Image 1 (cartoon, one colour):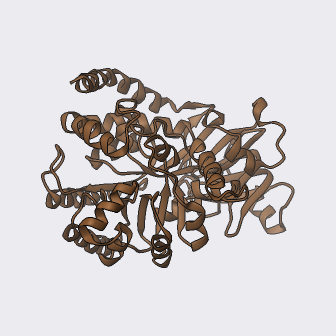
Image 2 (image 1 turned 90 degrees about the vertical axis):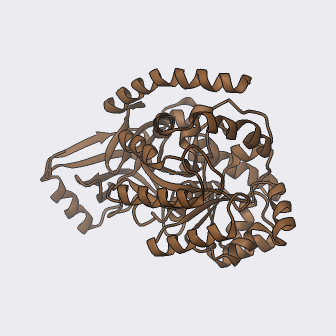
Image 3 (image 1 turned 90 degrees about the horizontal axis):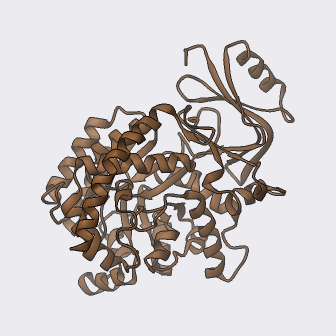
Length: 456
């Protein structure tokens, strides 16, 4: 794209979170410049004179217009908790409760297989799956973050790297000191990449000591980084914390200074009223991962109570080893449906709340809401187009309801990140297709190695 060119996309519908509620516009065109910044949004039926003049000025420049026809244009979905490289473990540890899943399958496989090559390959595959399904940003917590970053950048996807910190040794690092050193090295090496942001990722209260959490808090404050950790995913974690520390994990996190507006807690399944009040008081964020929590029989997070208390609720897929899909449309739908059953109230967590959780709330949790999460002038053109032509999408009385309860990742036809087309007409962009073809050649080798370990 040349410096004087403007890109634009026109669709039958534009749907975006607004400060309050959801903005729904008909027959709308979004314009963005060579930096990927949205410079104008034009709704044919509702234009002011000033907006009309801006549109006329833009049309004096060369415009690359994509006419999406009968489609919905909306912000790209934000997967606020994922372990992308674990796509190579998809289906290798099914039908097990969390601790058996971790201790008997995942940790042994990771110890034998996970290295820089594994992470780059697995992350490429995951990024392709997410982009094709309308996810434009991923919060990724896994080993070898620099290699994960290389894969995200190669695929053109936005990512926040929650750089791991844990007490026990892995192939990646020997102890907490080394994990922290590698985290800081990765952040320093990659901080100039526009599509990347960073967080510190202490694995969980049950795998990280008080002293290490205190060091994480100090580094996070110094570098203005979020802290992203697993929180109260199972009842067992809570019981063990009460036995070992005499307090629930959320109270311990507050005591250690971990809770803040920059705190991201993944799962939050076993939160009681006291935990929820602590999170809300500290303006914390919880990432709901409904499919993973169901598959591991961990439970259902109390997202309606969290939202009512004032905590920010986002949505994530978790990794493909526990989900087994990286499908944010499925997670949106499940989040809304499960909340209704849990509350015994069909109005609990409506479609609008689920859509916000998958877009602007996710951006807020990652500290990126000034950049992405809604379609607004000045923000980045991280956008997706969903076709409304499928039989199951018609008739459509409420487009927000259809986005959450009807649409699937198969309906995504275009995906842009920072204004660059990553998916066009339902397929990956040409350079990403080639990278994916190369990755598939390596995938067979890792699949064979995973199978060997599973049989052992």
